[in-house]
Amino acid sequence: MTAPVFSLHNRVAVVTGASSGIGRAIARGIASSGASVGCIDLEGSDLDGVVAEIEDAGGKAHAAPTNVTDPDGMAASIALVEDALGPLTLAVNAAGIANAAPAAVMSLAQWQGVIDVDLTGVFVSCQAEAQAMLRNGGGAIVNIASMSATIANRGLHQAHYNAAKAGVVHLGKSLAWEWAEGGIRVNSISPGYTYTPMTKRPEQANAMTGYAADTPLGRNAQPEDIVGPVVFLLSEAASFVTGVDLLVDGGFVIW
Image (cartoon, rainbow, N blue to C red; front, top):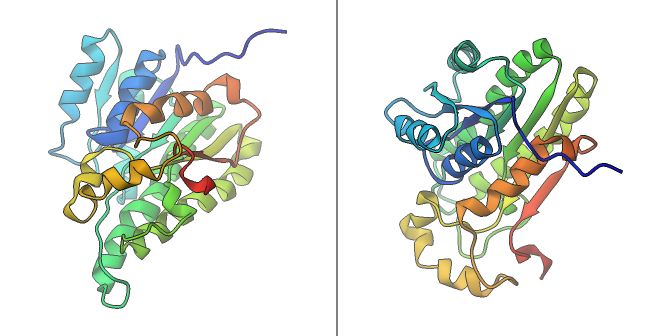
């Protein structure tokens, strides 16, 4: 029996939300596992910085800025990455935003803004990535959801965020069956509380110590804690895994 293959050598990937937080750690991590990485985020974000980090470590990367809610922009970014690095077969969709307001008074604009990026943006990204992968003979997509897809976070007024992340999980299951015949696996990862710029927003930052105490492993995650599970789901070691949501939460949801 041969050992599972976790290497991503000679594969081309894109990562949305690659300029910061979990997305940046994933871009660096899958590059260190051998993939050439197209880094996608908003114009004006620190894409040049993450590309430089990857290249300084001996990897290959290319910046392809766009807004993930723009289908034409995503298609153009995928084409740019393929021109620079080769045929796309891997993707991680980590772009997302968060804010908070009680549901009873949340404006429709605030609701829609989070849904547009965190759910519709994932669909737009998956669609553009799958169109390339179907041409290229298949691939693997990992969407970054949240344990907020499974629980309602105590003290956080974020019905829009929770609903979007639950949608990401079920979107992955739906796309997994639609694209299985084309050789594309689609899974999601649901991180627990993770130290990122998003969790440092005022309504959440002071609570992070309490969240760590409520986590069986006794701490919150660092962005790098999410990299290993992503590499697994992208790799041939997960060749029979599709339509799965993998909780990476230090055990938070078990009690």
